Image (cartoon, rainbow, N blue to C red; front, side, top):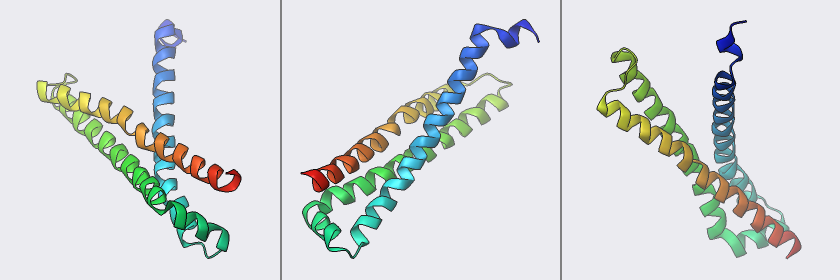
Length: 134
């Protein structure tokens, strides 16, 4: 093995990519799961969930919308990344001024997409805990 392969910088870069990919995957899964969980609760015919829906319908719909927003931001993140990569490819690996702006937007959407996923999942757990134990 070459020294570059074993270097601390290479390991840090590999770890960063692995964790960034995992965060994106989990954000997408949470974003897809929130509307599904909300739909299951709202459409359930049991009397126990009917009371929860009557008390918290607005919050449940907001949770579903947060999931949809997380997925939309995830898509936008990948779309902007694709456009930045295309710009770099056309510029022989160097980003143009426009490409740098697109890349920065891709970075911003990476962090922003996590907010609705986290808020939505914590809110869903809080609503269920409050209903079950409150």
